[in-house]
Image (cartoon, rainbow, N blue to C red; front, side):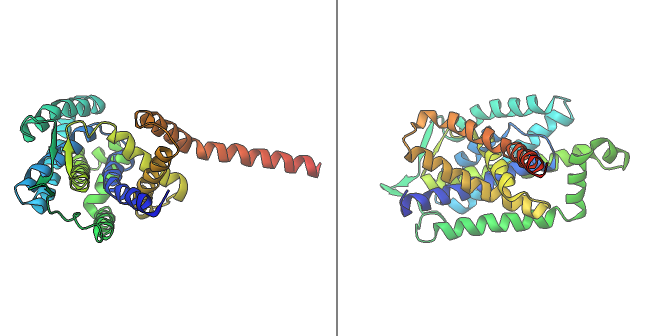
Length: 296
């Protein structure tokens, strides 16, 4: 793997680090994986692509976050007001977003971000500054989330995920916490989709397929390696894991795996990563048994 390919993998990993940070809120804070992700990711990419072609790439990033947050609010509404099971609520929102995303993209499955035969100008247009821009975005998100989860509102959101029944008895509105958590999560997911569209210079209607697994992979790999003990390290682990996952993904492609096989490779990689603590425990037990036999 040469330097250019590795740099590209790291940059893509930082784009998906924003996705993993968004999923960290629903998975680790709210303890409820959200399938809205596969739809809101494309929503962010679609609206950003359309606004970038209109000469407003930075406003497109902001709109991607706002529409992503709105997608999360729809799922929260289905959960809290319509009393639909969280997993099904996410599926319903994701399914409905497919048609909405097509409308945003003027009923075309793919939008290329080229103006006059050249890539449209965005914050990621300059290859010399792209890495630093992405690093800055990820660092700012981690810092803001860390600060937020230390506030009273953030602590209430964390408490709602830890023990919903206890929080209800403390006069905290759990429904409002679900609106807050899902909207914040999907705002970051939408931003990740928008950044990917600007990075790759196109948006695709099927670009959200597998994003839930991809984001989870980053969280799981980061936690398996860094073993975070607090919220700050948990956020850093999610970002680092996303970058490492993308590097491993690129390495698998370089080893000769076909692109069609990468979903299988991803699933195997995540399964192995999840099993690392169990494997380490077995190996530690075996070492203890050998030590006892020697002492005997």
